[in-house]
Amino acid sequence: MPERLAIDGGTPVRSSVLPYGRQQIDDEDVAAVVAALRSAWLTTGPAVEEFERKFSEYVGASHAVAVSSGTAALHAAMDAVDLKAGDEVIVTPMTFAASANCIVYCGGTPVFADVEPGTLLLDPAQVEAKITPRTRAVVAVDYTGQPAALDELLQICRKHDLVLIEDACHALGAEYHGRKVGSIADMTVFSFHPVKHITTGEGGMITTNRDDLAGSMKRFRNHGITSDFKQRAQTGSYYYEMVELGYNYRLTDLQCALGVTQLHKLPGWLERRRAFAAQYNEAFGGMNGVTPLKVRQNVLHAYHLYVAKFEASDKTHDRDWIFKALRAEGIGVNVHYIPVHLHPYYRKTWGTGEGLCPVAEAAYSKIISLPMFNGMSDGDLADVIASVEKLHL
Ligand SMILES: Cc1ncc(COP(=O)(O)O)c(C=O)c1O
Image (cartoon, rainbow, N blue to C red; front, side, top):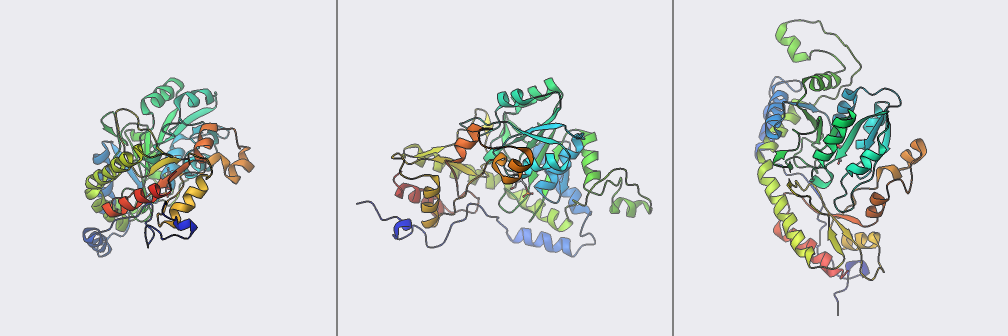
């Protein structure tokens, strides 16, 4: 007799809900933020430079530009492309809306290209098929923490003179053919939202090896002004020039101080995430109804998310039922993502809809993200596996 499921009134596997992701803050982090609070600089101070320097060294890029969120990072990167009205940018639909929204912020036209079925990463062949004389850039997402097909995408971008923006908000610490993401695309974007690998509350970073793009993004985060407050304090000058339109997208010293101490802990945290993923893979390898996403050759996955396709073998239950059944067991599952081109804004404003990216749409009806964060215990992981097992898919 199978155990009664919590969704049917049985006893849940867990009495408290395990979230799908959450931050980890320790005494070192708290002390660093308190020290920044007591310092002379709450913003545009030395902690910003320190975080940028350590971050660029970690990923192996020449420049890192800290901004107030991953969304601001995408906006700054897209602004640096210098789109003209009607210019097109190709983007994956299997992402958070901000990856496409940044194109619209900058007056561009978003063009959705479909993903590969096994990895749900942007499909280079689909990108090539969507290129027109108006195409200026490609936004590829390292979905779940696996690097996009960077060699193939860079080859296409070089051939057609396009800028490659890599949205690595899921992929801090991931490696592609032995190189860390952040040093490969023209610009790489990161987020420090609390569910990401490291957090600054809200926060983001763009890395690049190009001096011109770094300069443009540093102005953009500071109203389009050529110097910041600290530089003027050092030279004793009041004079500054606003040379282009920008925003206040600065990241504070309090946040950067936290970023520095979080970054110290990243290598150990990545190991934990990879170990959890290996245990999930092993458990689901012998289970019906659960298909983990494929991992490409020569990459080191950063596992921001652990996504699998779920399908009951007798087809009596769909993804939404499986989602609810796991939630009832106390497992805080999630779905990443509703394909961006299916959101009402994109349908209404850009005429997108079903059929535009059939692979992403088919995957969306099956995917579930299971809990994945460094602070999870081995017992938490065992609860997730037991809950999936209990469904007898
Ligand atoms: C792929 C992707 N891009 C961009 C963002 C936006 O980052 P933020 O929330 O820091 O603005 C996120 C955050 O959820 C994301 O997952």
